[in-house]
Length: 393
Ligand code: PLP
Image 1 (cartoon, helix red, strand yellow):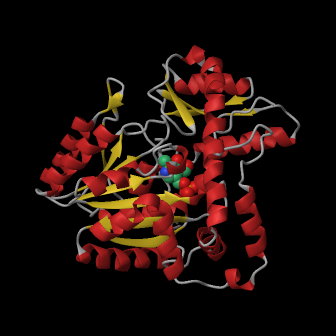
Image 2 (cartoon, rainbow, N blue to C red):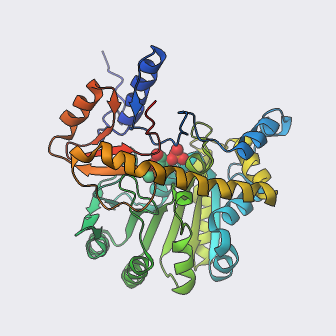
């Protein structure tokens, strides 16, 4: 008998392990067990409830009953969404970036949808996707979905971002395939909490500009945790100061910023000096959206528009980001103390996670699980501990 084997069944990177662990936690909690969930990337308050903004909740309650939000919307999210998404993401750099570059955009199903579209459209079949040696496991899994191989750059050298290696790997890709497409997750890198500083960004932008003379360079900038950094729009400021000749695709996620993980909203922005890139982005990203999820979540599109059209609400939401940052730093010392037996953390500046390098990550995480403490092993070498969900109740 003919077997119906799907070609992508073996996606191999264990990229959904975190959701399986989370499910285990939820089952134990529903049985009345006391569990510490330091595995999942969701920010909870000290009562173990999703840290959700009162402003966002209020807007959602209003929108959910509106008939208009139940209707289909254009595949790209429509004019208003795209205008406000750019304004939200670029923030104080919006006007200057818009006058220096062409900025295109499309609504997506979360940050994951944005990354998926970017990889699908900007890595050719004969090319490899360039990803960090330590990073979100879904980067590799997305590449696999499109039958793409990956090239890996070394993330750290002597406790700092290994820029030299990143540029070397990009050069290798250009030599081998004529172009380079790389992912950088910044600020608040998952899983280390590293944030690139001004000098580092300058070096990267100059380096990628140089390489772009040899072959097209596309930077996919994953800003999922952007709003948890105190200098969240640094990259955009930098490309206002230093003219960027490569193309940047910005993958934004509403999940983390607004505490709406399950509702699914994101955007992909394309920033380039060339009008041809703008037109090409619009066509290819709408085609990718239309053939994957067809149209975005209209309710969430309306949420962003309503928020942006009400400056008072936006001000309150921005204040909440500061509260969230304070909550994370208040937990930091406790987490460091409780997990000091795992050794030193990798360089952390801000964000949801801490990362430890250990000898046998799987064994250690299993031992912790026996004590009802859930952490996330990354391969057998690292353990990620979520500060965002670390509540001892
Ligand atoms: N990028 C990174 C580094 C992440 O950790 C996540 C989620 O955990 C995402 C992107 C995508 O977020 P979402 O698809 O929930 O918007």
